[in-house]
Length: 236
Image (cartoon, rainbow, N blue to C red; front, top):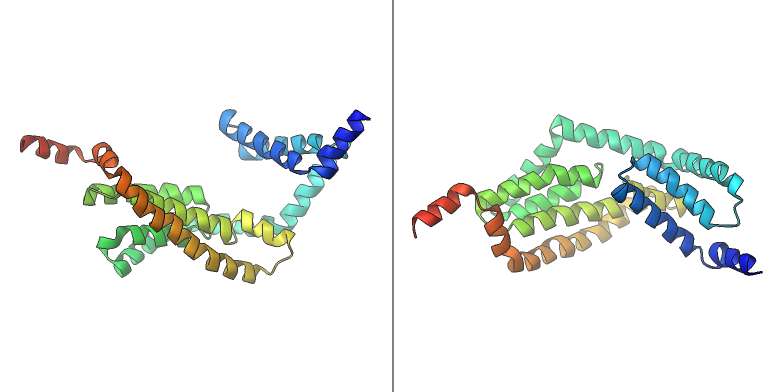
């Protein structure tokens, strides 16, 4: 009776437990064991199946394979195409042209807006980690050129890219949500942009300015170019 009650709690009454088990497992596999993402996903799927006792242990591989194939049939091709397009944008230099285009529009004195807009646009077809690795060196270069605002620059890049990655297809998360909810993809993109733009502005530029005022001295000491520090010491 206790086992049956526990099974009912885990699978029928509290499916959140299975979700938590899967999330904890995938974080553990990726961050602690440093497994390849595909292997981590497969193992986490097995753990979710074990945490849902209504699924017989022998049926877990078949259930996982069926769910995986259905997911790939629905959103796999758009995700793969987005990855190809993103890689092409980076390798062809188009991403750099987007950054330079924003810089020409807003001016060199508004570097945070240039980085913010570039990250927001590029993160639509390009995965967030690639966007961050692409633009973070530009934020450091801007910090070396201006001597300030590194926290603002890096927060603007991270927030804009993360918001787009989470709200606007064809990135995997919102694309899967649109597929599961049977939502129109065009409407999902439009609504994602309408929600994402103000969210990114608040999280990127708003919070970026706030945290930048409280961490300028720390970053200035850490990231100040060596030649600048030498000249400052020589004038003392």
